[in-house]
Structure formats: structure tokens, C-alpha cells
Amino acid sequence: MVVPRRAAFAEESAEVEVLYANLDKMKSLTKKIQGSMTRLETSGKMVQDAIGPIYGNTQRLQTTNSNIDHILEAIGRIREPLDMRNREERILRSPPQRVGLGEYIASIDRTNQALRELKQSNLRSNQQAISELDGLLHVGGQQLEDVFRDILRQDAQPVEHLHFITKQLDFPRLPQNKTSQLRTINAHVASPAAQRPPSETQGTPTAKAYAEVRGQHLTLSLQNLATASISMTRKTSVGVLYKKDSSGIGTYARGIQGLYTAEYDNICPIFPREEWGSILSNTCQSSLNAFASTLRELDTHITENILTDCFLAYEIVEVVSNISYQLENRTGELKQVMSEALRPVRETAKSSLSTLLNDTRTRIQQTITLPADGAAVPITSETMTRLQEMTNYISPLSSILTSLGDRGWSTSTAASSSSSTPTLKSFDVGADGAKLFAHYASDMIDTVLSNLEKRASTSLRSKSLQGVFLANNVVIVDRMIRSSELQPLLQGAQPRLDAWRKKTTALYLDGWKETSMYLLDIQYTNRGARPSSTGTASALDSAAILKQLSSKDKDAIKEKFRSFNASFEELVAKHKAYKMEREVRQALGREVQMFLEALYGRFWDRYHDIDKGKGKYVKYDKGQLAAVLASLG
Picture 1 (cartoon, one colour):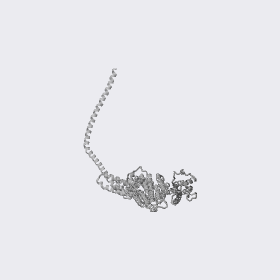
Picture 2 (cartoon, helix red, strand yellow):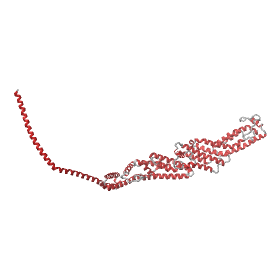
Picture 3 (cartoon, rainbow, N blue to C red):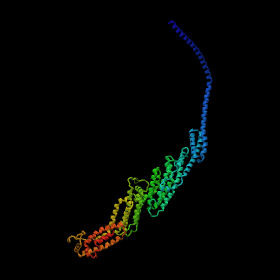
Picture 4 (spheres, helix red, strand yellow):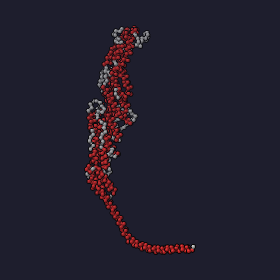
């Protein structure tokens, strides 16, 4: 057991000795390595001391080179716009049609970009280049403006307006490809760098060019319509009432509406939204001036022929008001300008209402003689014809009458209404135009009848003739109301006409009162039984009554019959001689029959036996008298 243990310790001891030997070798190598490191460090320090200055110089040279490269790049950027100017100048000074519109606009874009970069550099040395590029852009803007005008002129021929108006077609617009070109040109000409300094009223050069070219196009297209409106109005026969749509003003207005609407549709895709209204107004200004001049000329004609052509004024008010509202709804513009153009005609239309009343009154008062046969005078039918014609213009008349106010057509009120200053009446939202017209028409009818009554009372001696005369005129008024559009408007005037009928009937029957007086007698109730007065007495009653009369009373009865016969026949002859309208003859004949037949029947029943049926005094029996009275109608 001892021998194996010693052998093991001897083996381990040998291994330890080997490790110690290796350790000694490692220590020797470590010392050699440390010596080498020391020598290397010393050499490195010597190299660093030698190379350090050279490295610093290299870094400084690299920085210098980098700075030089940056300077060269900056110089290149500065020289680039100058070099570019030469290239772009050749393009911008050439006609756009030669180089192509797209290339020309691209050149302007490049020039604009270069100009912005130069301005951002803030280098004084660039001021000359900036000035030159500004000049180039100015030239380019002018060239584009000329192209803008040329494109517009291609579609600036006058339009054959009647073709579009009569067939209710939309007026032609600019082709889409051209509006696209115009929009592009406008965007470049109107840019702050490219456009010339505009005045406040002229706008951009393209806006001004558009207004000039298209404005002339509108004026020329509408010129014939303006001329036709005036010439057609002047061809109207003197003294003949103007008939609706016979002047051409409606066609003129529809032409304006169609062309202005088309022009607005042209403007919208070309210019910015904030410029639409001003450009449309400037474009339409020339043609609107011509329109206003035409209206002034028509107004002069209307004023000179106010009694017959006042209806033209109403038509103009209606037509122009309608298109101004429609244009405002579509474009938001032009209503105020058109209202100003309409003002003279509107004032003439307002004053015409009182003028017609005054003229009617004056003409009747200045009438020298009235028809001796009681016929109606022409002024009645003329007045009613005017009122009938007015029903064709209810819309404009409602507006005019509303601005005047109820009964504002009287002389004093109408004279004060000519001012353009709005009044409370102008804003009477509760005013009914149709009702106001009914009031005006009623006033006109009353003016005619009341003045005819005054004139008849001084010119016609007989009240019966006065009654016939007034009745004829009243019937004409009533007939022309019922046979026209006046009937639904003047339903409230019937009580006034009924009052006039009663008055005329009373005047006419005044002449028959004397005749009726012959049929009155005196009855004495204290002389026996009272004779019957119910109209049912027999011949025996008549004989009995006559027996109670004295010779003097009988002579008086005979005289009454004789006087009645003479007066009755005279009045019947006059009645048949009077010029009566059919309705008047029937109405007055019926009134006379109702008035006289009962009186005569009673008188005849009592005294017809006065001449024993010989007919010497009692010329008519009840049937014969009734037949004569019936013939009066």
C-alpha cells in the first residue's frame, strides 16, 4: 500500500517541476515583450513628433479646398441665371406662335424662378441681372397679352342674334380648348412678377384686354337690335295705341340676357372667382351704355306721344326689370346699372298715370258740343280701350302703382314722386298691385263720367237727353269691362256703375214726369162711395164715375187725355230719335213702361168712357199703350 502512494506523489511532483519551468520561460518572454513595447513607444513618440505638423497642414489644406469648392459652386449659381438669361431671351423675344405656346410659357416659368432666386441672394452684383430679367418678363407678358387678344378675336364676330332668340337657343360660348389656353395665359400674365403695375380701375392686362375685345363683340352684336327697337317704335302710326311686343325692345332685352349670360360663362373658367363680377361689368359697360342711350331715345319718343305710347314705357319697365333680376340671380351683377338705365322710362311711366287722368278731364271740359241725339262720345271708348290695354301690363303697373301709393296718381302726389329718393310707399310690402290698378281704373272711369255729367248739364237742355247721353256712356263702360280682362279686376266697381245707372234713369224719367202728371186726378171721398182704384173696374164703373163729375170736371178729364196724348207721342218720337245703345234702349224703355203703364191703366179704367169709345180723347186703350211702351225697348 505504501509503494503505490509514493509513486503517485513522485508523478505529481514531476508535473509541478515542469510547470515551474514553463513559468520561468513565460517570465523571460514577458520581460522581452516589455522591452520591445518600451522601444516601440519610444519610436512612436519620435514618429508622432515628426508627422504631427504635416497632418495639421493637410487638414488645413482640405478645409481650404472645401471652401474653394463652395465658392466655385456659388459663383456657378450666380452665373447660371446670367447664362440662362441669354437662352431665355432668345425664346421670350420670339413670337409665341413660332416657339410654341407651351415652350414660351415654360420659358417664362424658368425666368420667374431665376428671378426669385436672384432676389433671395440679396447680392448687389445681381441687381443688373434682376433688372434684365424683369425686362424679359415684361416682354413676355406683352407677347402673351397679344396672344390672349388674338385668341379672343378669333371668336369675336358679331352674333346672328335672331337665330338664337327665335329658336330659344343658348348663345355660343368660347370653345373649351381656347378657354384653357386663355386661363393659362392669364395665370402667367397676371402673376406678380410678370404683370405690369396696373391702376386700381384697369385690373390685370388680360382682364382689360378681355373687356375691350369681348365688350366690342357685345356692342356690335347688339347694335342692330338697338337700331331696330328705335326704328320699329317710330314706324308706329300717330294716334294709334301702342301694341305689346311691337317695338322690338323685348327681343333687344332677350339678346342682352343671352349674350351676357354666355359672357359670364366664358369669364368663369378663365379668371379667378374674385374677378368675375368686375370683369363682367367692364365687359358689358360699352353695350350697357348703348342700351341706356337707346332707352333715353325711346323715352323721348314716349314723352312726345305719351297718350298712345305710355304702354311702351310699361313694357320697357317689365322687360328690363325681369332681365335685370334674372341676370343678378345668375351673375350677381348688373342689376344696379340696368336700373339706372331704366330710371328715365320708369319715371315717365309713373307720370303717365296722372297725365292720362288730366288729359281725359281736360279733353271733356274743352269739348265744344255734345251729340244732339244723346250718342256716346268717342272719349269714353278711347278711355276704356286704354284701360283694357293696361291689363296687358299688370306686372309693371303693379310695381309703378305701389311706388306711387294708393291714389298717388293724383296731380300733386304724382308730381312729387318724380324724385329718385325712395319713400315709405316704395316699401309697402302689403300693397296689392291688382287692387291699386282697380282703384286707378275706377278713378279714371269716375273722371270720365263725372266730367261728362258736368258737360252735359251745360250743353244739353233736356234732362232726358242728358240721361240718355250718360246712360250710353255708362253702358259702353260696363260693356267694355265685361268683355275684357277688366272684369275680374273691377268687380268692386260695379256698385259705382249701378249708382250711375240709377242717376241716368232718374234724369231720363224726369222728362216723363210732366206726361205722368196728366194721369193724376182729384178724388173726393165725401161724394158717395169711393170708386175702385185697383184696376179691376168695369166699363160700368167708368160710366158711374163720369156721372158723378160735373161738366167742368169732364172737360178737365178730356183735356188731360188730349194733353197726355200729345206729350206721350212727343216723348215716344224723341225716344225713338235718340241714339241709344241696345242695352240703354231696353233698360230705359222698361223703366218708362214700369213708370207709366200702371198710371195710365188706372186713369183709363176710371175715365176711358169719356168719349164713348170714339177715340177722340182716349186715343189708346191699355193694350195699345202697353204695345207702344213695349216698342220703346
